[in-house]
Amino acid sequence: MRIPHNGIVTCAIVGMAVREALAPFTGHPFDFEIWVRLGFYVSHGFDPYTFLEPVQGLSFQNTHLLPSIAYPPAWALIQAFLYRVYEFSSMHNRFFYYFILKQPMVFGDLFVAAELYFILKKYNQLYAKSAFYFWMFSPYTIILSSMWGMFDQLALALVLASMIEINNIVKSSTIFSLSVFLKGLPIMFLVPFSFHNRSKRSALLYVGISISLFILFTLLPYVIFTDWNINGLLASGTDTIHKVGNAMNYEVVFSSVTMYYTIPPDVYNLLRIIAYAWIPALFVAYFICIKNKNSLNYLVLSSIFIVLTFFLTAAQVNEQYATYFIALGLLDVGLNGVNIKWFRGVWASSTLYMFFNNVYLIRFFAPILTQEGSLEKVLTTGVPGLIRTFLLVASALSFTYFSVRYLISCYFRIKRSGGNM
View 1 (cartoon, helix red, strand yellow):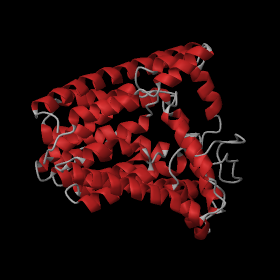
View 2 (tube, rainbow, N blue to C red):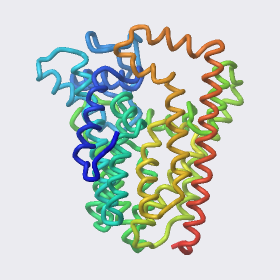
View 3 (tube, rainbow, N blue to C red):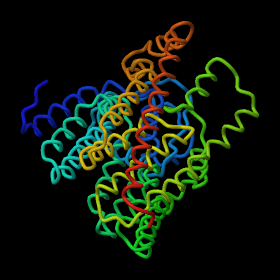
């Protein structure tokens, strides 16, 4: 499709229209079904960190119980608010409810695209528009937000807003704390954001404000909703840190083996220990990239170095994590002129992985496809299952290869920029 040179508005309208058209009729049968249940139960006063039963007339999965979220309570509160909006509308239709639940994700994409354009236009007006177009029309971002129903773009939008305000400690750290309150993953950016062109004392102030506000935001709901039990939050957070699961990197080999063989308990326990590797790996990455640099270019470079380090050491790398890479990669290409083939390789291989891992996207049509489960079983067992597993592993290993190459390029650019702070 040909987009006019000044077609930002046109691009935004078309991109949003595509997302809104898909929003009511698609959804991940696990994650999005949890949002469906979460909104109902939390709006009625239930603790979000408990097992959730199906909601009659709204659920599209008949599984009796599903675990709840493994994030801070912000998302549960947002879902409760959206359920109240649905209830207030008096339009008792589950597809309308799904449409309402998807609105934060859909508009989150627009916010991220606008922020990318705002950051890049000062350096290259033409590339800024290209980045905006890419984000709005990327199959990856469309599938993740409007079909899957994942909300990482909202946390990402806050990270980018914090980056825009990076020279204002109070504003930037406050916004950053909100990104972590929404989804804990952005905490990995705290160190490079804190030390951006600051003395050690100012960096500690940034860390102190961010962490203090995050703790305050997280505990406040427990003061208001006294029936909530904080042990549920702590248990879900602890489990996430060392979780062994489906991985978009080389770890996919282990998860693929479990489809056909039972891993001995000793081996699985070893994998759970190795799953902590991303924590020391990030500290090494921080040591390499922390410098007193007054440069947005370097902040982007160090942030993407952190993301890639996480990708290559975490035992669970879900597709939604690539959202942060894609935005930072677009900034890195625009600001630092990095070799675009490494960026293309990472996002293209992650897109393929998403396609194969979600059974050729059939999984996302569970809200309207009553036979989705049966069809998925056919495609994931026998010869079709072996073919899918091969394609899944190939895409994950490609993702690993391009991530390594991109990480190496980041490392040498960091070393050329000077020594540690």
